[in-house]
Image 1 (cartoon, rainbow, N blue to C red):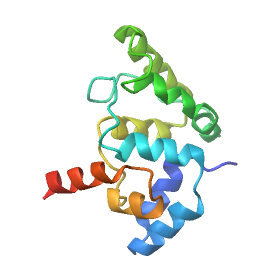
Image 2: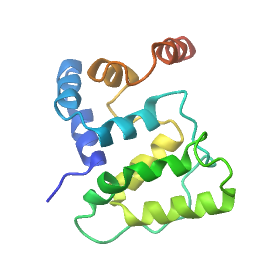
Image 3: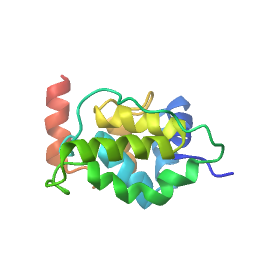
Image 4: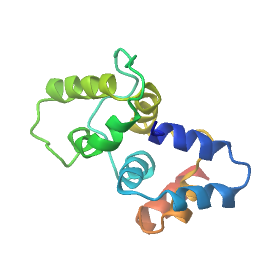
Length: 148
């Protein structure tokens, strides 16, 4: 059984020390993890979807954690700057269908990330320290100024 991205990030978020979190993210570095973390934590990444959780039926099949890992490149349909000519209703329908195909925890995580809400216990600092260069420095300093 494969662990999903959301499950992994939940475990990382429960670690006590910052260095443990950074080391765990760094040790599990992958293209999929980078795509998901950038979509959720990079302030320059804007989702082309309305805020809030869309009406979807969580997937009730077991062992669906591989679906997000296999299909993560499809996230570009939901990000501004990619497929901007896609009709909004079609984009939103595709997002609901995507959420219904992936593991429920992964779907919840994507809904959080879409609204730029971090995973519990994982901050922008953890992400940028673990994966330097993933988020441009000017985005990090802008976000830190806004948070203060």
